[in-house]
Amino acid sequence: MKLTAEYGRKIRKEYSEVKENEVCVQLGLKQLGGSKTKIDGINEQSRVSIKNFKSSSTQVHLTTKKQFKKILGLDNNSEKFIEMFCGDQDVKYKNRDRYFTNEIDSIYVNSFLNFLNNNKIKIIDLMIRNGFDITNIAYMDLNTNTLYNIKYEDLLIKIDECVWVAKKGGIHLKNKDNKTYFHIQREGKKNKNNRYNVLCHIHRNLFI
Image (cartoon, rainbow, N blue to C red; front, side, top):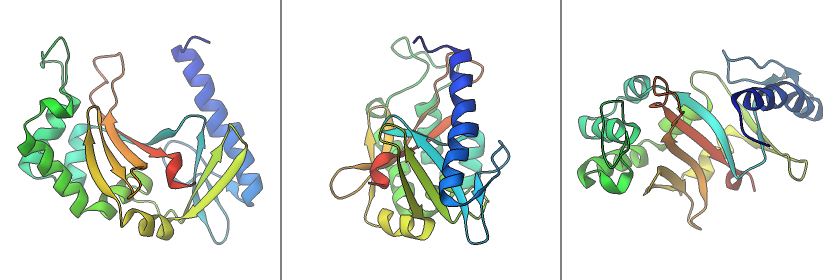
């Protein structure tokens, strides 16, 4: 089926309502949802963020360049990396409005990588919690109908050994076996008025 905006809205509605509720039922949660909270289901013990996957990763956080830089308190070189990596309408480079990581000065790339590796908990907390007291992340593999559930504190233990590395189109948090747990990319929508944001993905590898 052709991926249209209408089809995309239909899928998001199904995932955020029907599929999400199915996970809540399995875990004994009351469904919350909505765009103003990262908490999708709760009970007396847990506040759970729910993710449904069909591919190897899915969106976990989206923010503007301005907010991303402000919240994390990036240094000047790291800010320069984000500006070039996400691009803007004034950039004209090889018929593109952004730069890939291998086209950005290594000073800026390494500054951003150093920041991420020195602040792993801070960046993951932004992606997962963003001010909400999430206790668990639930992952439903829609290909196998298998449900995984990881405590936030256990997630932090898993990422402790990981390292942020630069790939051509994104920055990946990889474990010692070179498996990606999270990655950061440019949003890249077709609409040029809304395509220069920072998009963060969570990967299936984290749960399996």
